Image 1: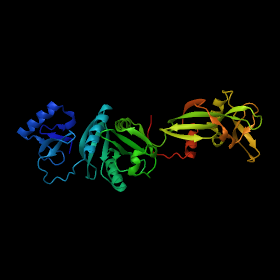
Image 2: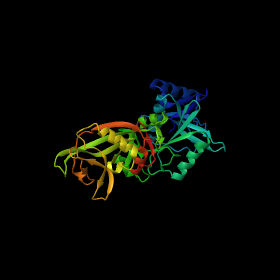
Image 3: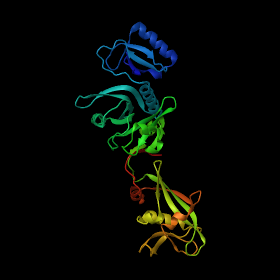
Image 4: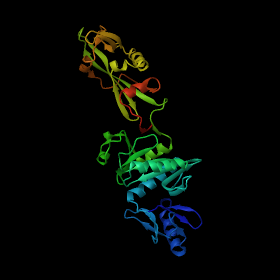
Length: 354
């Protein structure tokens, strides 16, 4: 069910670009002059509506054309894609055909164009093997076209060469872009937000993608949000109530990582930032290296705000967390924080930058 046809004047017509009056006029014109053709095979066209009211073009006689019928969801996503891309200042049309330098033909569900840039946006509703997806992506690359994939089937490769998201949601409640954090996801996981790195409304994702915000891995200039969380406890040595840093929260790309003060001691630059910021809060015990008899070593640790005694790693678990962080700031990952993220299990993946 293509959304595009060709007029005998040479113009390309998208069904959703027409008002109801224009659609009716085109229908009557085509009945009289038969001046519309299918872009896939030049067959004569009839104008139709789906059961949901979506306007589309169909072959008057299918003949030798091998075009596979599309689902209502596929049509909806093609229209949504064109509208989102156009809203960002790009030109876009559906069912655009092209060829690689070796003559291999391809047809993009949506081709977005701005200046010399071209992006083929493929909406793959039916199943497709990773090998076929990567092969088609390579064909676009050889054609000088970037490829962006919306795949209904999860579990596709997470690689820099394949910008892709999984399709979630539905037409009634809205389509979503599910950005995986691992290849080990399944169809049943579409309804489990915690299984995905990010979940975005599909139109918001598409606008971010053509706006250059859908990127692989971390750039040195990317910023993280760091929140210093504190809590209160009673000092084992002097018995006074003291406040300590319970954890440092790092937020990047909608994902949160937690780091303790002893763990942060392995990363001098981030540790110094936290120590400097905490030093201005007199209710929080100083952070510095202290000797531990129990562990037989020196490590970065919390201390009592009153007697400066070491609050050991296991004693930190006794603290009752405060409701709000004592401090928060943004900092580029290049300031020593990339190594901290790596230690927390960060994997370079595709994600939308805010």
